Length: 274
Length: 251
Image 1 (tube, each protein chain N blue to C red):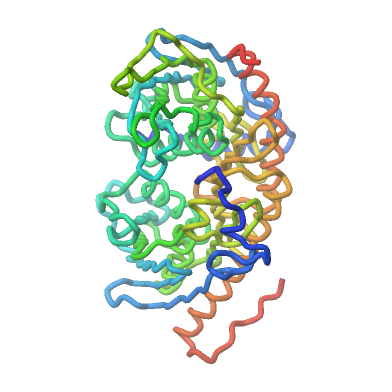
Image 2 (tube, one colour):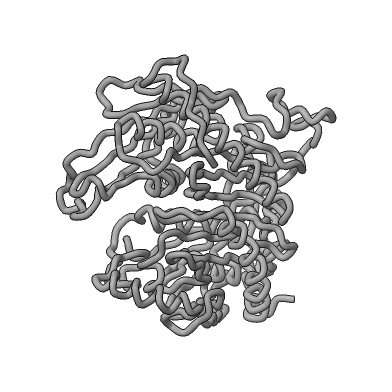
């Protein structure tokens, strides 16, 4: 489903207008170059999920849900639980989205979101083990994208992070035969840090934080950096068939760390996480 | 990527020597051959450490299906694929999600260098086949593909050269290999157009603080420039004979 970027008919006309505005430091929707759109996060919107979050970033809207069951670990990591993040652009999300297997943009989206969570060590997967090599917790975070208006990367990441922060998972114990049984007790996930993704689009010579769909339609290149709460950069991805200067890359990393702080506070507040 | 640094002296010893005998800022041995496949319009073979990767270019050619043609430029298509025998455990030959993502980032890394507007209504296919993988295969694949594109005579603004840096046993290192990738703490593959210093690929897996990120990025850039020299040497060797020296480029 190629809903992520579609070339609009009026692209060239808008590009001229956008460049003119950008040269004065203003974006088409009135934001400054490094301003995020309004971000609203609602938690526990799906009762049946172990954790969930509905995120609106401007008009981009999506829901993440956490489901947890017991699984078998990968043979090469017998001492670690499983954590799988995936995303789907639903056919109701955009006139350009179509049902079918995920296209490369959606695969990239899910993989980059997964990378940010995994590489930041947000969840201490070594604590998700019941019997090493045999029984581990498998944490699945699925993101359903409901309305596409740009910057799915960050919106997806915020929803995944918030749903994990608020998740309460069933505690399993071993019975006398050593078989795992589910208990009534619900426990939070072992959280270590809160990763925050900040995506910027290059339109001409300008770097725009949190690009809207209209801006993404005109962007030459896109760069995403995920930072943790100790100021480390823990995941990155450049996308789109354009290039960036070395200075733009370094500046993007700095901006991601700086802007990440603001957004982290907002996520913590939404998740009532202290 | 494993988070635990493990036994830190295993990957890098007290003398700063890595498991395969390299210094922390040293590349693996690299060999590039040009024009190795008869049928392809352009081709290259790269050995990058134990990576053995073939890249082939077909095109510009007619586009199938026809509706995917563009009126003002060529369509660049890219397939990164690992042979089933290329890894320790047999790899399922069906394209994985990882391979689909890498195909996309490779295409986006090459595209800025190509003058696709010179070939409207056509397609250019780039096939990157990993025959043996050893960590850093996307970078080696990009470097080979860009040489293959030059060999195919596609108009280009520059070659694209790629290299990774990373963090292993707490230290920033150049050109992460398979073991280091699996047991290390970070991997930062990048690709650049060396003449213009434009970054066309950047990915990061793992944690780097501000200072480590700057150093890793800087080292990866210098790695790209070394790869660039070898790419030029290989192309010049193929078209002007082995003894020709690469031209000096004024900075």
